[in-house]
Image 1 (tube, rainbow, N blue to C red):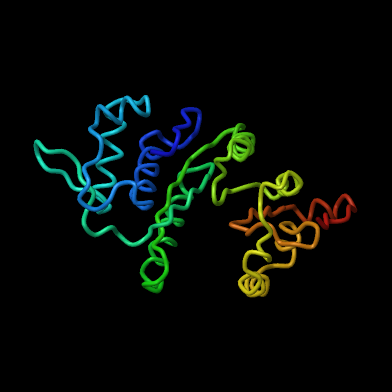
Image 2 (cartoon, helix red, strand yellow; image 1 turned 180 degrees about the vertical axis):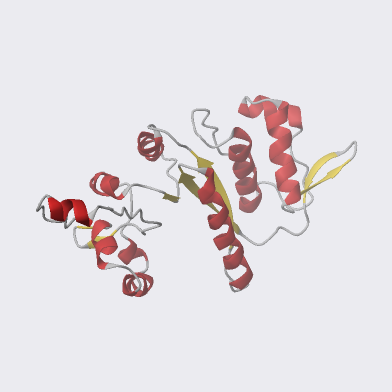
Length: 224
């Protein structure tokens, strides 16, 4: 069985094991009706606890890939679910997970039956290590599909070839997106003639001042 668990990764071990088993099923290494190795055999093969193995198997059973027979073992289902793409997202705060899950739900409801369904794997990683950890994950070959990056760090990630230009991924979508975007936000997320990021939100500061005091002191009101 191909695949290796990366214990230093931010992705939980049971999810890594789940994906390894899922790919083995899709490759035909385990065919419909085949019995999977026992929990103890999987523990020994991957060097993980029985809890980790059981959690991976439970999720695969819930997704319809496996079924269990008491006293006989775990087997591959006769009908494998349609392909499900996992999108791995790294965000600094949990508040970002809810709208992203809503977007995935809308996509799955409205997408054509010929398109793969999508499931979200959100990793919350806050604090000062947020950007270094993303760079480290890319270096280990475990890059997320998307991450919430400060626009001031955008050029750094571009220069390291860690992200793809959006206008090369989907030029038509970017053209529509630019029409709805304030020019300043497009400029902040552009570099080397390409658009690299999507403006998720913006913080606007308002400066309040006393006009009468400034007039009494014959000072010019602030302009920025």
